[in-house]
Structures are given as C-alpha cells and as structure tokens.
Image (tube, rainbow, N blue to C red; front, top):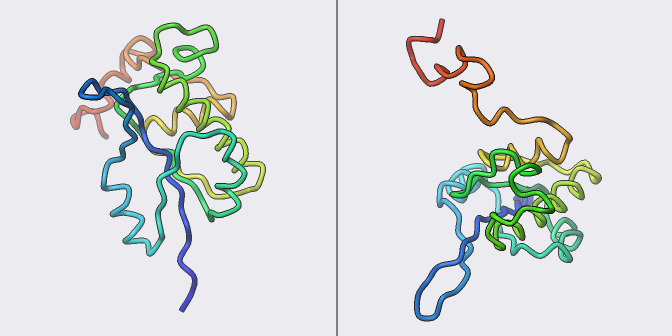
Length: 149
C-alpha cells in the first residue's frame, strides 16, 4: 500500500477571555475532511518559527489556512510597526511567512486558502487589491451572478 502524504496545516489563533483567559488554535474541520478524502494524514502546526525546518523534514506538503482575522495586506496591515494587530496574529504571520519561505526553498507543495493566499502572495512580493470597488468599480460586482458573461 502506498504511503499516505503527511500534510501540515497552519491554524488560526486568537485570545479568548475566560477562566482562565488563554490563547486557542483552531481550524475549520473541512480542512481535515478534504485532506482525509485525498488520503492524506493531516497535522496542525503550532506557530513556532524555530520548528519550521523540523516540521518540513517530517511533512510532504503544507496548507496555509484562512482565518477569522482578515489580513487584507499582511505587509501593510501587520507590518513591523503595526500596533493594531493582536500579538497572536503577528505570531501567526511571522510563523507562516517563515514556513512558506522554507517550503518554497525546498520546492515543497504549498496550498494556500483564503487569507493564506494573501500571505503567500505577500511572501512572493505580490500586491493585493484590498478594495475591488476602489480599484475598479466594475470589479465590485465580482459576486453578482448577473455580471458573469
């Protein structure tokens, strides 16, 4: 029987108030469902930049997931001088940036989803249009089924 691919997924994270208040990692379960259907073994990755090379040594590919906090433009909105981004989101971006760069250096498969696509784009030096309507009013109808020809 062929070996099942091992895929690491970067989760989202957030601070939740409670007793005690603490940080949580979380992922939409559909990430795991899709990987299971593809006969892959999936692993959630803790946001630890010092572990990136060890993670990649153990994996066959990575998924950079989406999340509740919209980065829009990771470099602009969560840049080095940003004071508005929650610390856990800064930690996520720092980890995913290092993970993506290392995976690309190894020519390892990278699948980016939603906000993960924005992060991948930023790592590769791309630009993001954060408001379709501001960039081109016609683009604001991208979800309007009547605009599809």
